Image: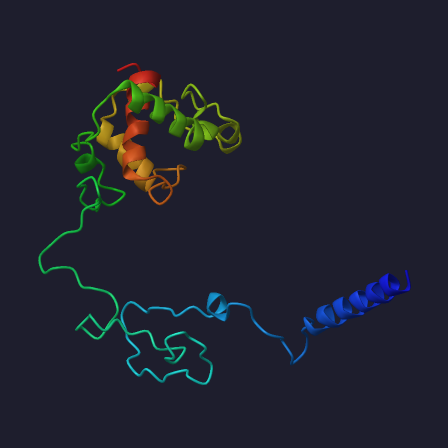
Length: 208
């Protein structure tokens, strides 16, 4: 029993010393576990730090280079990012070109056709997206009676008046750039999702 009691006391004292050694404060911030998780090497896109010794006073990198060294040695343009091929335009994985129409270019937007083929699956996804992003203002049925819409006021009734005959490109453009009291949602909803919402509005809400 005496031995067990002695070992228990020694265990408690050892644990106290270990925990006390982990304390940090003031000028003593203690030791960092996996310091590269805290001080990751940032690759600045338009510049390079090519001196391998930059930040060696701080570094504990496994490659023994300075903490600030971040050069992409395979890039000949003295910057970390690659420049696009001259006279090319970037497309996304589905081949879409960048959407560059301005907010006021509604007539041009109206000429754009929906690139996503209509299907039951697309309509189901469009419904989910509509309920997630649009129903709070436009209401579940598109009548402008969502809870947020009732407070804001002036929300479009998608089932009424001139809204019925709006081209799909027009609706996509308004979702993307906003119009009137409706804010732009281009940064929140992917182009594919916006077109699916357009399909749902035209097919299910407006019954076109």
